[in-house]
Amino acid sequence: MKKVIKKLMSLGLCLTLGLVALSGSATAADSNNRFVTLNKKDAFVDPSSGLLIIPFKKEKDKLVPVSKREYLDSTQKPIVTKDQGSNTHGKSQLDIISPTADYREYWLYTETLTSTEYGTIQQVSSGITCTTPTCSISKAVTATVSASFSTSATIEQDAIAAGASFTWQYQLTDQSTYQFNLNQGDSGYIGFKPRFNRSSGVLKKYSNWDGYLGISKNAWGLSPKKTSNGEADGYYVFVYTDY
Image (tube, rainbow, N blue to C red; front, top):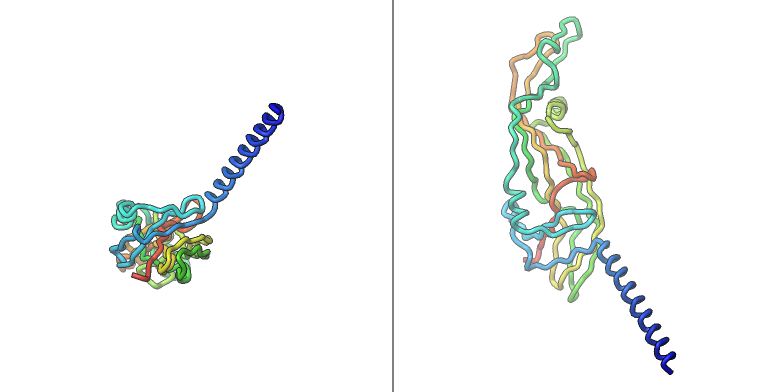
């Protein structure tokens, strides 16, 4: 009888250990999924847009909540670095004068200041609405961020991009799918607040016959900032539309 009891106890111990192991692996699998749980009590109004939001930062393909203080400190205070005109496309005025060649005119850009700043929130998903006590909704998110300039002329834009002190990005994209957990009555959409590198400076017009033509104007360009993974940098936000 004692041998039977020992065998049963041994079997029970094995079953218990097996259940613990299965439970642990299930938890690990859940932690690897792209679940985002939303609670409206965590939302606040973004002062630059007037939207009610919950902000997130993408880390290792997951959306991680960030505090109101962190979000506001990052998005309301651009980081400025003065460059004092160190970039002029790598040419001196003597280098660009060639009176024997066919006449042409072009622009050179001298950068005087750089900064990083955030753009406006753009909608990057279709609308989300929860009509039952709780909802778990899968949403594809596509954020595409493009460069912008103070000028519409392509030749001037190219001069700004070439004269900037950082590697210029014309367009960056981030695509992911996430599972959003909402409460009844919640509705909204996913937004993206992109981060940019800004270059400010002066455009000057030259010709290959005469050099500087005495024409200049202030100019700037915004280049999407890239993460270490090559994606568009910025904050994801859930924007509530039911308040």
